[in-house]
Length: 194
Image (cartoon, rainbow, N blue to C red; front, side):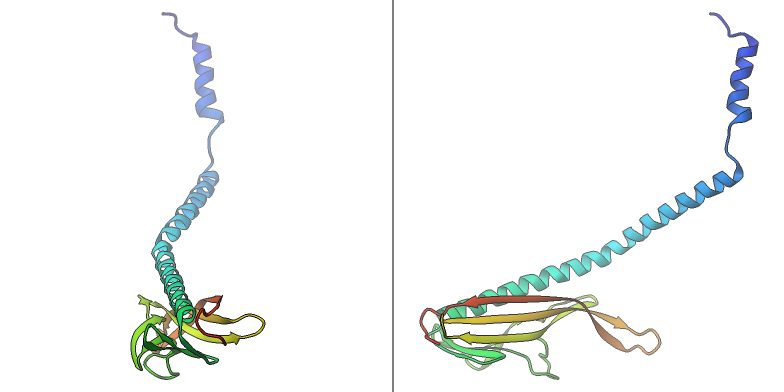
């Protein structure tokens, strides 16, 4: 085995240890950059449950609204008698008298789409969902009868996704609208002429 001459080894050591290296300022800057990156990553992980909860509420809202729109569409399509109002409609469907409308303002069911069967409110369609500090309300429900040129009914429903915020000083609760979704469809009754 042949050893390296002393002067070559000494040059390598001087190159590795003597001339090159990091100053204290460079190390501090690198440490601050790494600390910032770690803080950003930790904040994104801490916000994940909030985003997930809001995503679950939006998904539930869309599913409830889709089911309600489908229910109203099927009722209008198969009704044997139909009375379309601006914000509600009544229908005779499978021998039952049905009415779809919003709960009264200031009442227990305000902001909830109700379906009354034979004059008894027995199904809450949309707006009765809440999860932690999130909830939803139906802010607008419009039915339009279009007899000419085609026999159709337009249904438009606007739903607000709400977040309840509690004032730390007063303890008062306030609902803030985070998102608004609009659903619309047209349906042709099979058994009724408008």
